[in-house]
Image 1 (tube, helix red, strand yellow):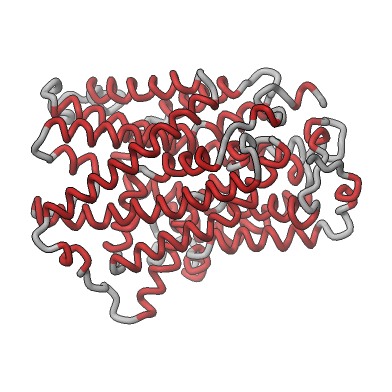
Image 2 (spheres, rainbow, N blue to C red):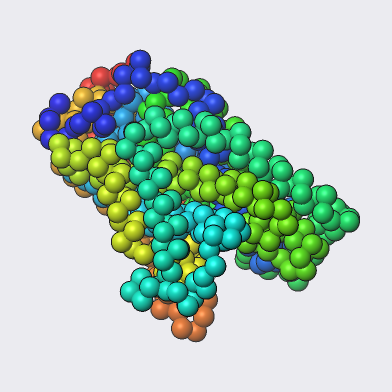
Length: 487
């Protein structure tokens, strides 16, 4: 091994330290899936015209689809005990691997800041309900940063909670996810029970009419929604080796993900549908934001417990989905100087510097659309890695060579880069239209045909990358035969 390419956090995890069972992986997904964006996903599809069951099936189908690359990419992590940036060296090279790992890390930093702001908002709501805060946030804003002192203090406190857990390492995240999972499920079911008890006729919650005049109108909404649903976890389909490397067996990582991901996402989207429908009957308006909802409940103890659940859900999602990946990605840049903890702290600092309250408050849904769209563009990276690991190498790697600056994986692998670029190019025009909020309008920068292609961005990207890379590697798979298989 070359010392400049390794450190204790990036080295293969020995078998005696692989203590994650299928329950830990399932709990990890419960902790990540239970968050405010999950709660509001189906509601956004219903507002676009879908019936409740159509929205729910779209969520389930999207998660079953993304589960496939999730399990496939997790295989290498479990078999060789290496994190995502190291596994990416097999296809992109020891230097080229920085491109996919940093691309993934930047998305995570954006999400980290926004989720931390959401958690801070829950703390602010708790303090307001208790009567400890009596300020007008708009009037008390600090000029430079645009939020009030109490809002800043709430955000800073939640940020510090992340930091305290991070400095204790990956095992503290494992412990939090395992402890939080049953509580979050119980909290969600309690919210569902509240909705059912509060309405006079439960059947009214499921009688929304379709907003489409024809089936063609439905499909125009369905496919972009499905792509967005897949894109919701497309980033995790890349860095899932960061967690699966701690699993005892392939069965544990696969079963844990199958049990944890699609079931939790579908359940909490269903809870979001029912509870949002109940708010129309109870409050006279649809309240899709759970923080706003629990703030309007009558009992202070119930409000506090409910907001604590929101807080815990946000914390568990943020630590697993938005800290581990950039921490390993930044550590991979300079392993001798940057550890997992250092990379995680850098993620936290970047999350503050981007001023996430401006992004969330000023651009709201646009930022979420942008981030989900950007993650869908990462599909080609998954395509290259899956093709390299399963088609070219047949899951056989020389793990030590991944840490060798002069070995077969040294430098930049141009075939992976060519496949990545060619697979991304068809989606760029549609992405630009979406990012500039001009898609399907007369002001669109690129023709509408690219918007239609972008509806399938993740599918197009991962398929093109897989095929192009496989073709480019024909006759160049000799490393497969020479690889030392690690049992």
